[in-house]
Length: 529
Image 1 (cartoon, rainbow, N blue to C red):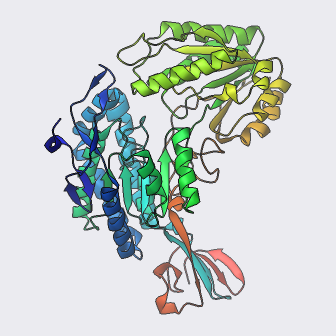
Image 2: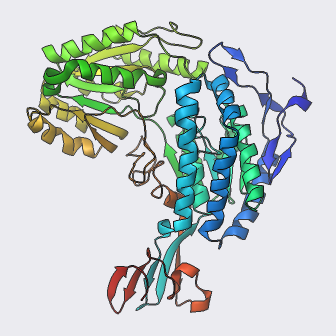
Image 3: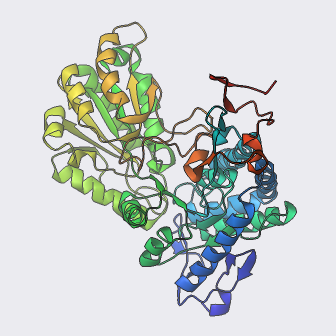
């Protein structure tokens, strides 16, 4: 590679030749070959330029109405759709995710949909939670927090991309400029998004530093970035080890950082449902666990069933299906290696291998569909070890000797994004459900009944979050607008501020139907009049 072939970075609305001394290329996991496109590992001097530009844009936009940001988000969604074929081809080459339906028909429409939902939230402004207490003269509302840096993961090149995904959309909806830190698994995909973002910035007449792109940094510069005085908040989706290091750096500087880290998404399958519809439950679990080679943060990685004939039959049927199915292509050599290391941790701790356990068997980077099993008693001896996340096409079955032991297993679970209880419809599992649900409810962000957890609907009522270590904070969601927007907002309070100096939403004459008002001692929402 020559220096002139290195892709530029996007800083303050300009594609800028990088001064990087280090470079990288993505790989095509389906053929296990490097893709000949060179991208920079940006030095601090470039990151510093982006920070300065973002801080200036933030000051300029602080009092802008939500409609300005909505216009950008809508224009951006349109620009993305105009580049759909180019984006899908690039993402397929860099991740081996299927062109259709995964990329073209599911993930890209989801991405543009959540951008438009963010636009609607920004225009509607209900997320601001404007509150007027006329008796005390105190008024408050949420407003932009300031420049936000977003780190995207490897497994969703569109819907969670640092420059187009849910964290990005929420941060922009709240009125903040974003510095996107791309993921090294799909830099070309991210570059195309950046082109679309710049076109939308120009058409919506927004500050050119509203969206900036750095493809990669050194670890030390990443920690320095999240703790810089010009950064107000961070969003991160990815591995727990990296996320916790970034969190330590951000915490030390007093910067909020919202993390999605890891989750094994426990599924409790009760006896009645296996007696009622065993084959259908096998189909549902196998389809969920092996979808996309298991590379979803909501993949069901821990299954708790009874250690009886029904439970053993279920485990055996799943093992047969795992061995018969061709393994999917994994996102990278690193993902495959980490999956194998996690399987080794579980087997060394005493889990029995029912299927798989070795690399290969599929196209390109692959690992055999892997099923392990351990007794409930052994799980309870080493609950932390047996909750090691194996990010990929595998699961651990825990065979419990009673509903009481299932409850004890639930009590020893770490925080997860999701938890599911599958039960019979004839009422035979109701007592067991009532025993397990109160415990599981406190361990997960989203509780499911009779439905596998893979897949996250973009809905205002969705919670894609949960207790640590699923996320860094149990009170926020990474998916679901407007609920995801206040992560990137600050609470502005005005005490005895003159009426003509108040923000529009906090003025007495504001017609906002979403304003919470105290008039003559009575709190209510609704229009003035």
